[in-house]
Structures are given as C-alpha cells and as structure tokens.
Length: 199
Image (cartoon, rainbow, N blue to C red; front, side):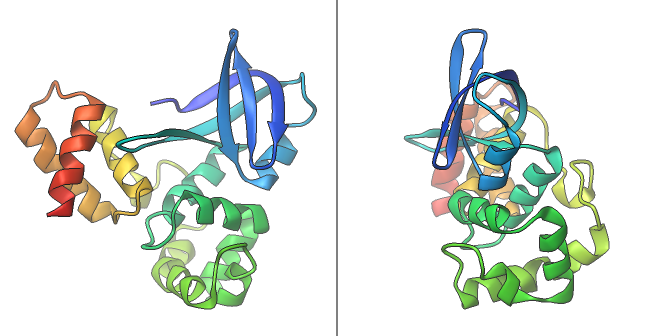
C-alpha cells in the first residue's frame, strides 16, 4: 500500500495531479482543496495517499494532510458514499467545517457538495454525528479508524472503498484470509473477499 508520496509536482488538472517520484509519475486523484495546497507545478510536494483496489482498477487518492485522509475513510464508511462523493465533500468543506456540520446535525451544509442530495446528506449526518462529536479532531490512531496492517488491512480498505460497510469488509476479508492462509497476496484477498461479500 502506498501511504505517502514525496516528489515533484509534474502537472495538475481537474481533480488530479501527477507527482514525479524518482522519474515515476503517479496519477493522484484529489479534492480541490488538496490540489490548491500543492502549489505551483515543479515544486517539491508531499501528499498522503489512499489506494483503492478493485477487480479491474487501481486508484490512488491524495490528501494534503493525514487528517483529511482520515475523514475520507470515515465518510466512505457510510453506505452510498464512494470516493467521488467523499472527495466532493472534502472539496466543498474544510475539515473543521465538516466536523461542526456533523456534530450539529447540519445536513444542509453537507448537501452543498456536488453529487450529495438531501437524503444522502441526512444519512451521512445521522451515521457520523456521534463519531464526529466524540472524536473531535480525528487522527489515524483513533479507534474508529484503526485497521489491520499489511495485505489484510489493505484488502479491508479496498472493500470499503467499493462501498461495503467496514464490518462487512472485515468479515469478508477475514473469511478470505482464513481460506487462503497467512501468505495470501492483496489481489487474492480482494478477489476472494468480494466473492464472499456478494453471497
């Protein structure tokens, strides 16, 4: 799993940037706020990343701060919130504003984001209100965001990125890991876990 990139900002466009790390260009999707924070093309940048893995794709998402990545993970734990919607929310709202909106139950503020209708905004607010209020400034070490390390953790992240709830993803990956053994690769874990989750 790629957790962070440090290199030269090679180019940027609508919703993405290319980071040159030792001559290899990484295409990273990001929120508008993260893209603004990267600065001018040619400059040295560090970006925190989240890798989404599917049966037929690999996507690398980038965040200016680890805190923003943690909020992305929390948002995508809600059914109906995929990577695109989560990035839209993080583009529309600062992390502090998002936290306040969730803590106060202000679904209208969440609905400002592109692609977020009133019903989805209400679901997000309902499911995350208690977490936002209890956790305050969320960090990667918080219990709500803890995950297994290695391929198992990456496989769980991949399934949650595909829209499965964390509990469903964990159960499916655990079953896949038990079937395949401790030496199973990430690709194999994701493939088998998807089959088990679909049953």
